[in-house]
Structures are given as structure tokens and as C-alpha cells.
Length: 120
Image (cartoon, rainbow, N blue to C red; front, side):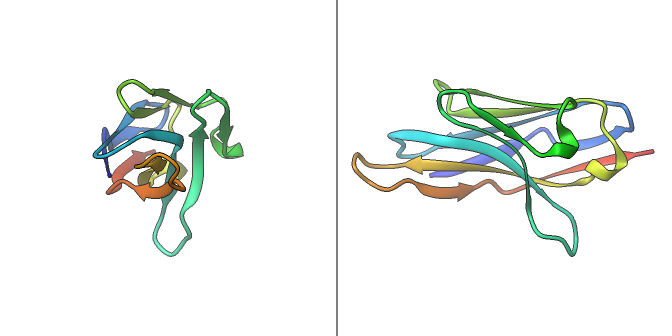
């Protein structure tokens, strides 16, 4: 199983970026898919995640600005980031709980990370 993230880059404060992450490989089902972010010297933190049936969780600091969505048929999760702030600057990682075989406990997989830089 591989998760491939894309869409990072630079934006000015108040701008927008959209991240995408597609899962590939031997996949029976994907439970939760989400996005985390990390800055130097800090632990990776949850930004947002979404269950297969559409339930979402957001970090308080991004509520109202970021929107997570997913296309189960395409095995893809998206993160629309609006009204970006300099403090959103981080490496963003996609995450998925993936079952590769029937009856198997889902494993946790990470994408390679994509850098988001927001300037003031």
C-alpha cells in the first residue's frame, strides 16, 4: 500500500491551497483517511480526518478554514485549505487506515509529506 500526496506549495496569507492524496496497492477497504502536519521540533498533529461514511474531525485551529473530503471510488482524500495563515506552514502528511486483505486488521500508512509555506 502506498499513499501519494500532492498539492503543497507556497501561498500568501489569506490564500488557498488544495492537497490531494491517493492510495494505491492491494486495498480491500480504507477506513479513516486524514491529514496531519508537522513543524520542526514539534510532534505531528492531526489536521483533519474523515471516516469512510463521511464523519469528520478537525483541529480547532483549522475549523471553518479547511475542508476535508474524499472520493472512495478513487481512493483519494483532499484537503481544501482557505484563508491560510503563516502558522499553517508545515509539512503535511496524509494518513490512511487500510485493510489489504479480508479479515485483516487495518494497517496505518503514511504518505511522503508535502510542504506548505504561507507567507505574511
